[in-house]
Image 1 (cartoon, rainbow, N blue to C red):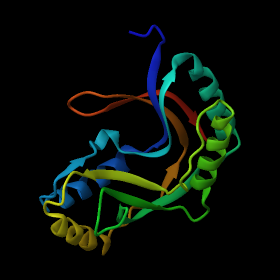
Image 2 (cartoon, rainbow, N blue to C red; image 1 turned 90 degrees about the vertical axis):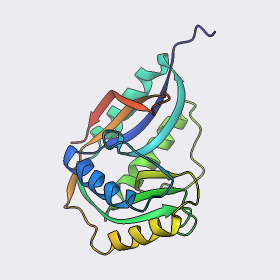
Image 3 (cartoon, rainbow, N blue to C red; image 1 turned 90 degrees about the horizontal axis):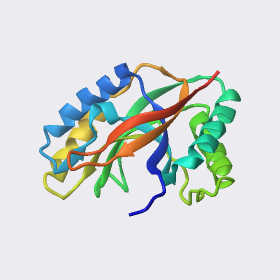
Image 4 (cartoon, rainbow, N blue to C red; image 1 turned 45 degrees about the vertical axis):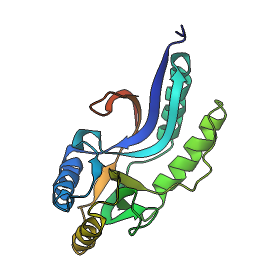
Length: 192
């Protein structure tokens, strides 16, 4: 057993209760497909900027300072959730997501700056281009996939949230258990 104190961490945008509630309603509609999926618990819905993995606790201070510096240079901004989709594609869905309309690409910009700043702290840089999305479910098998695709297409006909403000960059701890992950806030840096 290791004596090194570690936590499993990720950096994300915490979404408002109102937006998470709207996404929960959407999940309930998609669940009617009977798809074999692990649905993200509504209280765990967020927008991931960077997954850090298992991190020595002594690095937390440097991570928090990095988040504070980045947020101190950014004003809060507004986005909309306005489409549903799946990775790698709708027909071979492994992850179902809600996409954000970020007209100014501010989230992508923050993710790139964050990735670069964290590389200075010896975190591995991302190899894939950042895609703004909120994960709703992970697909476990092809059971009822066609019905799920149909539900996603139907929901896309009129899916759009009201504009909402992005005002934070949050460091979360993820604790895994047989019942699924639980997330707790380690640090939250507010945008101007």
